[in-house]
Length: 601
Image (cartoon, rainbow, N blue to C red; front, top):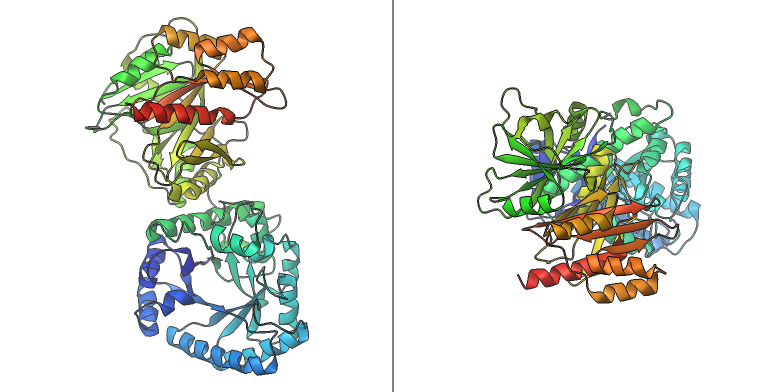
């Protein structure tokens, strides 16, 4: 289907926004009036630029406070409307958004409002313009799409139809099923936005916290399905007011926006229970198959020697050197760490990539490409495994594998001695730049079908840290995305290994001289107050520097952290009794200890 986006979604000038939308691949735009008013270019120049870029000018918006007014006030409404209709003629546009009245309405009568829309329709008809009437969620009298449609029906004018906006409908909790009672030809325009589940006034929620589809809590595939069942065949358009998007690079935001629409189209096509007139035009992506686990993590640095010493102390075995690259492998159970010193001059150890095991790497890579994920190309010699890969929003490379054939390319490794304490990768914790956190949620949900879990906030020395976990249904892949306070200069990533006995692993790590993060005695005093722990166990936790948490259902979590090496640190954890969390109550202790260590080193 045709895709469109409101210029209010992006930062920059109107010309910059048009270029960004065209470069991303949108078919058209909604022109947000303030963007045009502040532009030095004439309407004719904007029209010509859009034509050169191949962009349709789909909707002019907004026209406010148009109905529910007195007869004397209507004269001013018609005067304003005529000026805007003449402007639209210069732009070559044929659809204008008319919002329900929020400020000047004084007559709460549907027939009165319908009559005034009819008179506006007569005027618009002289310019060949359609009026798409929308119920704002905070409209003074009209705040429900069903009432807006009733007024449009009463107006009974060929130039007057309705605009359906997912935010205005879903934020108020209105049932979108009634949309199917509206004839498709009278749905003049469709605006889509997602949003987080917040408890606040709807106007502030709308103006500051909308998100692109797939980044929030709304059921947009279900909503779009209702719209398509009407026979609507116009563009799928995004109207997202968001403080972050209005500060970030417009080219990147436009690509993020189109990715969200593509994912929404595919999800809607999958969710529709029967063909609809518009469903045949929906984009269908290759199926998203949930990854079966983390295949490996990759640390890149000019010198990875300190990481090797740490891994050896945790019980990892040297898995060999790559036959053609300056890369080494360390293994423990199903946990594999690749150490890469290629093209890393001046680089401190940092998490550069991780691999996910998927059923069909080629189909997943194709899905990622259609969702505009930049591909990764690495030199591969004949006979070597070619792993498909692409770049996540934070710059981390994500590799795809079906199995572990690539491990055979590492030579000279030693077999592990005895039973491995570390058995696999429990989760990979990825720090996200504040301006790209929502994009990361969309990326991992749309490409891999990972589901966002309820976000949590924990207190750190530099402010609150928000964590949003992306998780596969079976928990085989867990990716906590940490959004750190704006301006925080230092934010290491970390990898958490799972084990069957965290106390034994901590004891072994200390014997292997692994530098562990210190835990203050105050923490254990508080732990004794929070939980009725056996004194002997509490003493052992204190002695080994192991942290503890317990869920209401009885599940327990034991874990400890290493010191940070470069820009990465490691966690070893044990889950007991079905514990599903990540030790969030202990995060402030870890953050404070890391901040102190970083300050004095």
